[in-house]
Structure formats: structure tokens, C-alpha cells
Image (cartoon, rainbow, N blue to C red; front, top):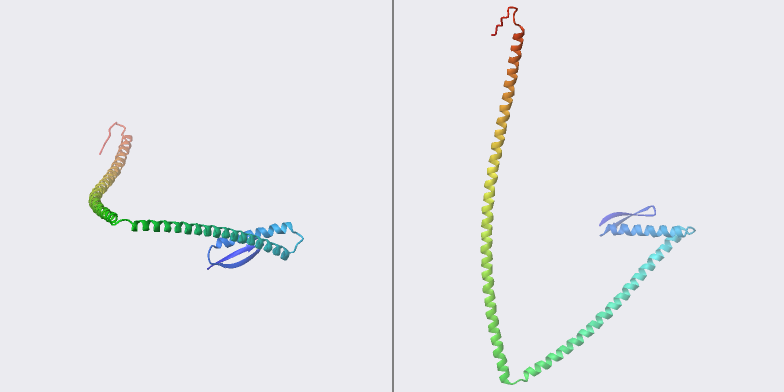
Length: 221
């Protein structure tokens, strides 16, 4: 049971609902709307009088609904009663017709009865043969289905193995590529270092060239 709060005209009412709490809240909103409408129309009436009129209106609507439901129920009951009567009459007619046919069959000659029994036996044999044939067909189809199912499962297993091999190959390629990229990055760092060292040596040579003696001699160690 769920606790809910219903607000009506500025007052909160704490209730418990077994089910559909939203329905109770919506009913409270509808009641509040009705009270406000009556309050606007009957400003000279007290709150108790307005609530009494609202209650009478709600009870009147409820009574109308009950009356409509009772009327509809009566109509349905009449329809059901008529249908039951018609069904009974039809059933009695069918029973009478069936009894008449049974009496006619019972009064046929022995020879005709024998012929009917022979035909019935022929039909039964033909029906049993047809059932056997259908069962054989169903068995054959079932075997074919099981065989096809096993073949599909085998194909799916092979495809899964192929996919696993492809995933392993791809992972291997990705690892190899990562190692290759890493080695190239290391080579690039080494080249940058060598370039920096060469730049330092060139700068040193420039400084030595600037220190050329007055006699034009240059000593390079």
C-alpha cells in the first residue's frame, strides 16, 4: 500500500492507495477544479454549502452512470437471453433432424448397412495409409532439417575459427606496426640529437674562423 498526498483547495490529505496512486491524485485535481468552478459561480455561498452542492453533483453524476450501466446491463441480458433462446431452438431443431436421420439410417436394409461398413473400412484403411505416409514425410523432413542444422553449425564453427585466426593475425600486425613506429620514433630522436651536436660543432667552427690571426693563419685542432 503506497502513501500519497492529495491537495484540494490548499489543504493536503494524506491517503493510502492499494494501486494506481496517480488515478487518486487526478481525481483530487478534478474535485478541486469542480469546487473552484462552484465557488466562482456561487460567491455568496459558504464553503459548507458549496461542498454540499459539489457532493450532490458528484452523486448525481454517479447515479446517472449507475443507471446507464444498469440499462446497458439489462439490454445485454435481454440480448443474451434471446441468443440463448434462439440457440436452444436451433439446437432442438438440429437434434430433431439428427434423430430423424438416425432413424432413417437405422431402418435401411442389411445389405445397405453392409455396404456402408465396407466403405467405412476402406476409408479407415485409406486414412491410416495416409497417416503413415505423412509420418514418413515428416520423419524425412525432420532428418533433413537436423542434417542441415548440423551442417550450418559446422560452417558457423569453421567461420568462427577463421575469424579467430584473422583477429590473431590482425593483432600481430598491429603489434608489429606499433614496434615499427616506436623504433622509427627512437631513430628520429637520435637524428635530432645528432643534428643538435652537428649544430654545436658548426657554431664552434664559426667562432674559430672569427679568431683568425692577423697574419691570415688559422689553426684548427
